[in-house]
Length: 75
Image (tube, rainbow, N blue to C red; front, side, top):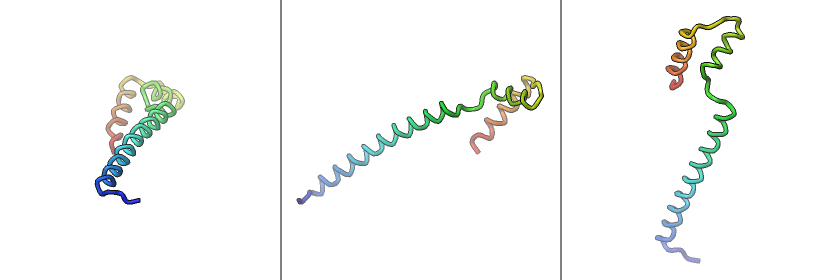
C-alpha cells in the first residue's frame, strides 16, 4: 500500500488537530473535577482556620490574608 505525500501530510495534520481537541476537552474536564473537589480558599475558610486556632479574626486580618495569598499565588 503506497501512500502519497499529500495524504500523509493530511493525515498528520488531522491527527494533530484531533489530539489537540481531545487534549483540550480532557484537560478542561479534569481541571473542573479538581476545582470541585478542592475549591480555592475563600474568606469563609480563612475565618474557620482562625477560629480553630482560638482567635476571632477581624475583617482587616481576613483581607490581609486574602491579599497575601493572591500576591503569592503566581509565584
